Length: 400
Image (cartoon, rainbow, N blue to C red):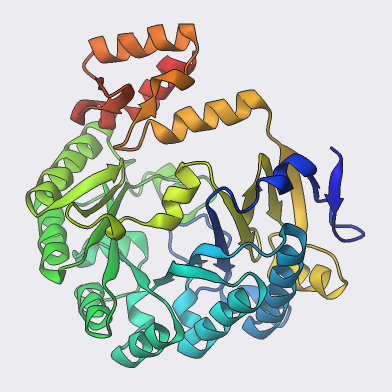
């Protein structure tokens, strides 16, 4: 791969073709905050508690590394203005309003923000307050995503979530009062022990909060997590596929009735406001470019994908030595790009254009339609309600 290389040991090389298109494709910046107060039992993200890190890394050393990475990234890419910024984790709100303000300042001073840029931060309801929301709104954040998961105390306990039931809804109200027009609540459904009435209570709370976006994800038992160990020991049952399907249909019906329409299989937004959709995530799903900064963050530019070293101490040390903290990279082939496009765009309400499919894939798409899993709309393959439950199977049918 011939192109631009940054850092003596960075291991990142971008071909001229990838760099030439920067700025003509959607461009966003993702910032990974790897810190958590406690580790949730279901989570397999690249996160660390203070006890796990000890003295090897700190928010300050992470922030210094982040500034270095963003400056080097902007130099490499030619400083395209960020159309979207998403600060995720981990628990970004543990940085406090001042820390989140410094994160956004680092993005501004390196890439800059495009006019009307969407700027999101995830937050744990317990580490927020009215003053917190006032200050991050003043700092330039435009959107908040709150981890609610459930309104049922016993469900939160199984997930090892530490926030109290009701706090997420209260935090959403505080964010709206601070001037945030775009607020998301995350739900997890299918947790062992969750009943229909528990899900109904969660949906009641979500709708009462008046948010304009909801994400709802089926619980996945990830290898290596505390939850997986409990399931393996027989302490908890594994999620049941039929239950998950019924819960999804229940969620979709309630949200649709309230004016929140699905635009991606696991995401709903106000039907009367296109800006309620998460533009940053749409950039991922539509094949845009993004720079992922922070330990373990993934990036993609013009068909090249790479990921950073995971540990915060190693991350900071590599950047202090003048290198980019690249842990690995790959050049996507045309087949890779096509496969990922099918996988992602099938999940969108806008659908997958038929003209990107080969002859065999088109015949497979016709089978999907005949089976009632999708329909054709203006030259696009769009999942039916039943097809959303079997989206992965639809993808496999088309690609094989």
